[in-house]
Structure formats: C-alpha cells, structure tokens
Length: 263
Image 1 (spheres, rainbow, N blue to C red):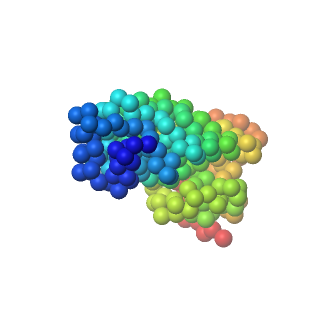
Image 2: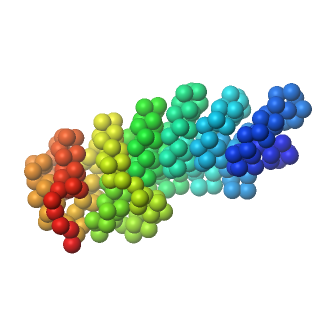
Image 3: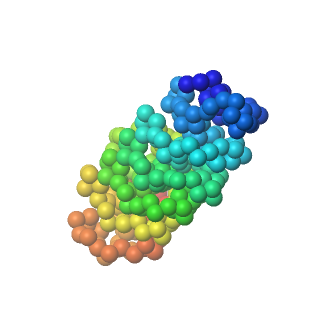
C-alpha cells in the first residue's frame, strides 16, 4: 500500500477533510495513485471508515470515484452499508442511494445478517426506512438463527424491556442487544411497522421452530396469551393462521403499553 492510500485511510478514519481533499487533488493531477479499496489495520476501507463516522460531506468527495467498491466486506463480512446501518448513519445510507452507488443489499456478514437486519436490531427506524426505500432487499431473509429482520426487531425490543426469558443466550449476550438498551420502544414499533408494510411474513419460524409470538411470551406468558387471543384466531403456535398486520401491531402495542404488571 502506497503512502497516499495510507493518508486517505487515516484521514477517513479521523474525519480530516482537508487531508482528503489534498490527496484527491494530487490523484486527479496524476501526481500519485490511490487505492480506494485499500484496507487499514482494522480491515476497513476508506468508505467503511466514512460510513462509521457518518460524515456525509466527506462521503461526497469520494463517491464519484469509479474504482470505489461499495460492497467490499471486512474480515467479519461487514460492508460499508452494514456499518452505517449499525451506527444509525441514516445520512450515509441516504447519500449512497442519492448518488446511485451500486449496493448489494443482499450481502450478509458472518452471522448471516443483512444491513436491513442490522438496522432493525438496533432499532434504527430511519435507516430501516432508507434501506427499504432504496432496495429490492428480501425483507424475509433469515440470519444464522433463522430469524428474519422482523423477528430480530421483536427479540431486541423485548430484550431491551427485560420482559422475556425466551431469548437464546446467543441473542441475549449479543452486543447489538446491549447497544440497543437505550433505544426508545417507539423506535422499535416504527421499525416493525416499516417491515410489516414491506411484506414481512409474521408466520415464519426460525431454526428453533419459534415464531415471533413466542418471544412475546416468557415471564408474562399468561397475560400475553390473553392479549393475543383478542387479535388471533389461534394462540397455539403449532396452528398456522392468517394474522393481519394490523392485528400484529395492535397486539404488540397493547402488550407494551397496556395496563399490566410484569413480574
């Protein structure tokens, strides 16, 4: 890796716009070559670092570079889009769409998560909206646990509230869930609504043979079943029933904000 590329990576990591301008100017004049897809010691490209920081102004400086590969993955399978989704960098996602940057929304990291699933996990409603608006992403794509973005959002929301003991250990100890502790419930509600509007299938079972409703049980199992009966034709998870999206939202809203005491 040449010195100019190293400068670009360092400046992208630090958000040093002046250095980036200088490096790009020299490259434009043919004074030096730049590898826009080179990686730093963290395994990040310049675009990944910019996405992590959420610096839309700096992003605009490099987006017109034809050699820029926006779908490069790091050692863990994360792309620039995924990093923006995890950080709630909605401006980055919007800019990538605005400039028609080629984005593969179907790419998965080593946990089987797409950018949509990651944004849903963190409760980043604006990121979820932008990804859904700018892609043909499969809203029912599953991760390594067999969970769709809808199911992941449900699990994260419940875990944040501490209302369920049905979350697998791998989920409960997830950095994503720990980072989502301060996310308002209303944000998760909006995420869930966006996913349902985009065609999320609420009847999908994950690899533990669980549906979304199983994660709304746990410690409040009896009370939740009473609420669910108001909106479902059958409570038994073995019975596949048609569940209107409006019923799902009503059920979750009542479950979360209803006049109930959880023990």
